Length: 196
Image 1 (tube, one colour):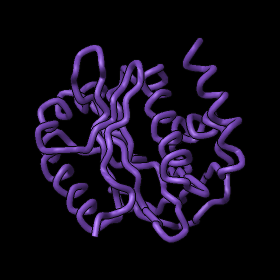
Image 2 (cartoon, helix red, strand yellow):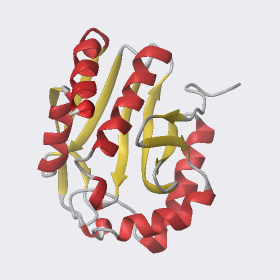
Image 3 (cartoon, one colour):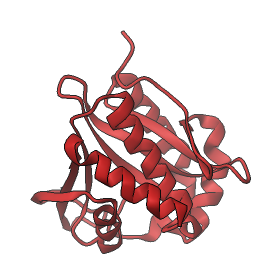
Image 4 (cartoon, one colour):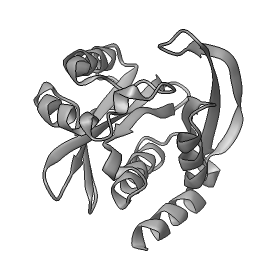
């Protein structure tokens, strides 16, 4: 049986999201070094030496039907500059979470990043007929929280003592979502931001 959602490539003006594969490894190692992203204590981004294992982990989750991982490709260069996923897939309720996302430092808060979110959300609501799309981030990850809020997602609540950070400290997780009825306004906002 084919897992839901099926693997797909999503393309825009600046970005292409294509199914993650081992061939993206070297580009992703270069990308994660831009900003030494693995050193951020409040999020989980692979160390360059662990990139192969992270790609394999995501592909195994894909085989189990709980994740659809993408490589984020910069169209101008053809390079993979980050990763993102549909995760916590619920095929019955038609819900996904957009998460486990990172882009090299210089692509954060750019048209590239905005377009990646627009591509994922458009596919989720308009092709997969999702009733809601969720985002989760650590309470300490203020940058991520602001970015999620700029998308138009609303805070559903905080899962207290939800996980542990790599250093062993307990993590509270902010849960956000966009529901189907909100999608037209969110799409208009993201499209406007891209056109500016």
